[in-house]
Amino acid sequence: MIFKNYYKLLELTKNIKSTPEEIKTAYREQAKKYHPDVNVNNKIAEERFKDINEAYRILSDPLQKRKYDKSWYNYVGKKLQKEKMSEKEVRVNDIVNMFFGASVSKKVSEASNPPIKGENIETKIDISIKEAFEGTEKKLSFASQGEKNKIITIKIPKGIGQGKIVRIEGKGKKGKNGGKNGDLLIKINITNTPMYKLIGNDIHANLYVTPWDAALGAKLSVDNIDGEVSILIPKGTQSGDKISIQNKGYYINDTQRGKLVIETQVVVPKKLSEKEKELFVKLRNASKFNPKNTVNIK
Image (cartoon, rainbow, N blue to C red; front, side, top):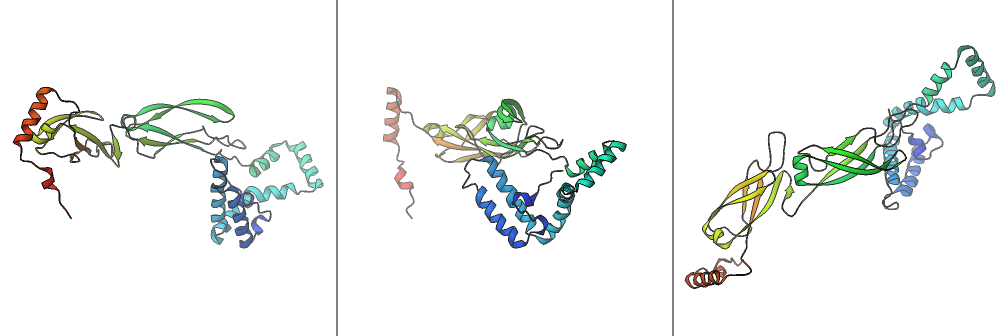
């Protein structure tokens, strides 16, 4: 169990005898001191600010404060009382230890100094859509438990969601009083690529189409994230038209996927052969199509 001394976090020396006004004043002072705007890119201050807000939320609520004070007395109050024992009481304990061993003192020590789990370490890692779709392994370098430039391998399962957390137990900060180490929490950020864009569970991609295929219609192939897909381009296709294919997008669950959304982009060649130029001239002379007539004026 992780026990946080909220009174110590707010620097309240009266502890459970602190008044609501004293708690509020102490909170404001500490929040101002550790606010992220004052401590830019300071992870320690950021964690302290979170703890301060948590402490005030509990201690400012009378019902939650009463419940917390019981735990505080067991974890901290008893220890403070023992520290105030008279020299005579200390000598009596020493005599008891002489005759009965140190087990009694050990139990008292364990009760007043419970094991505390170490704090978690949070970080973020970028992966491409294809890496997220197929699953991958990444190497991460970080410092923990006094070690520098420690490199660990992270296994990222296929189909992991945007913003999901990969937890590696025991790779966080060291525990106290024999408590377990904290965990390493890695937030996954799936990044778009020039070829694929992820929106929700749909994968968006561009399909570049020649003017003649757009006008006449055609069956074209698209390199999807998990293989080639045939797309039927209807006659008269325009730039910006979208074609959706069900169950060819990103994972929703083990059996369902989102859509593959293809957006067509009609492109013309920058350089023409003499034959192509001749055909385009003939087309221009023969065609009565005027795109100006298709513009709607509002």
